[in-house]
Image (cartoon, rainbow, N blue to C red; front, side, top):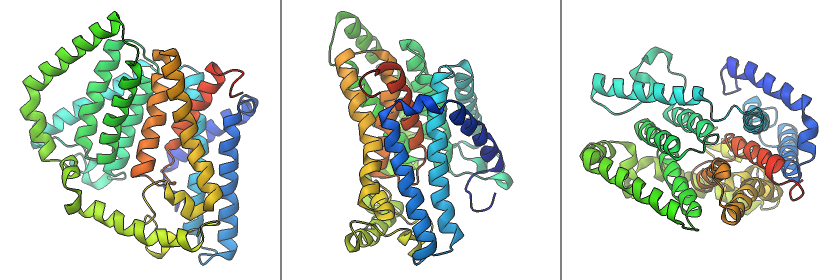
Length: 362
């Protein structure tokens, strides 16, 4: 579908999710956090309408389509994040099957090309439709849909190891390092209250990790040094990072000029994807109120789940904590307001409120 950013099959599938929302709308109305999402989506609609008729980009359908995608797919992914948990589809072996399939593909490509990289040009250059960041997002969220529904430690470790390898092969730095940082945070909160069982698990984990490092350390170092991930230690020389810094400084001027209402679609002065690649993009596009609402969508799940994890020390919310922390990390550093995968964090937290927080956030 022209100007809509996704393949037609995804648009068709999204209608099914929307039908589920309409049939079960009353469940969301009982959750206070849902209204933060509603108010933010209203902000997007108002900004899009006003911008379409009265901005420097009036009647520009490319500008309008970017806001439509944000509105529609943030809502769709939020519903999907809720319903995958509600209908117990998370933790299914089908997600693990796809993880094995991704890993097998990476290994086969490595033996075929000698390059530990996964991108579709290697498979069929004539049908490439998604880039390495989108490939990484597919890897990450397939893993997440398995991880969030599994409490067994061995199964979790196995899935994490697979996710580490396939994300390493994708070349998407923010997705890979966001994954590592988030896991460390979840592990940290999980071990604030040490007991004999946890100490034994930590020792076993350290032994396994040490053995893997000893056996495959040189191989991993070689892969890392020859991948895009290695450039994080020399960002001053990285053209992509420098370009984003230039874009950020240019776009910040639009916030300074109108800090209350922002400057909707002003990034189009440079190009469609030339927005600030962090949370400040919401301020530029939708003003101070849009920025505050967007920040609340990110921070409320992270803070609530972190406190709940510390108080209750339960494995059952580790998946919810992971996705909220992951989205916070990426959006604060490298992703813009148009990164609609935040919806999975929103939807997962809506389900957490529905199941665990009766009487507090409902």
